[in-house]
Image (cartoon, rainbow over the protein chains, first blue to last red):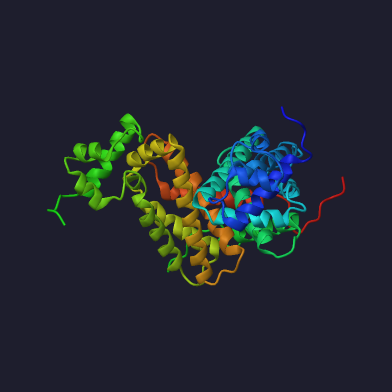
Length: 198
Length: 198
């Protein structure tokens, strides 16, 4: 290992996001990122496998927060309330990161390959959530449906948070989005009522 | 245009799926697909842009069925019931295609690039659904949440249909999956109830 660089990881991430925003993701090299951060390429590769990983390094942590909250929820809690606890925990990963998240989102939206990567990350988070729900004894298909519904709520709340100019309360947006999903699914005909002749 | 080949498109799709299943997607060439179908490469390229497109050619038709049913639903129908009509219409695209869908699913599951492509197709179907719901006057975030919930229901029902050895009733699985989502979202605490002190 080389000498210790104070917060090298954070500085590299910040420099990368700046450059991706200024010049575009494809036009930016690792050498330029390292230079902007005042570090060497070698230091870059001690922290990130490649320039794409800088954008997705937080996904593992996010998934861990989400899954841990679901795993540790009270045993008696209904799956949807367990999900609410997971969403709340996940939202904490973004506190004070609104500007960074906005920049990252713009970079990803501009690049098809990065968009695909983002979808893969969300799908793997959904699979991890479903696993954790099954471990809690939630049967299928309820476990997978709850996990997929959770990702839908997460995505919608996150996009609304990102769209605002100032950092709002992501945890509150998650709760509102989940309540909206409940309202949507209960607004229709009762499943047991048969269609009236028309 | 060359001479007319009876059902060339279908024969090419069938030959491609056979070869992808036997040798793997990556190991199969367009020349081999054309040969297996008893057709020329030129005929292949009149029907498909490349060997990947054979696997995704049905996505446009599926999305169209789904979106059209949503657009044409009775004006008074609640978004979730509109969604149910869309799911029902979408399920009709797969009647008598169970074996083909199983093979296709196995090919896609074995290849990361194809999985990413599949996720992109589902995301674009979700976006098209949300657009159509907004055109019906459904406000945000209800439109996007309903669309995302719809994709969740579609995905879970479809996976369950695919997993069975014999072709089951996909439309019924869609209805059951939607009812299960309703059950999941209504099982927890009421949104308006504040948490009890603990």
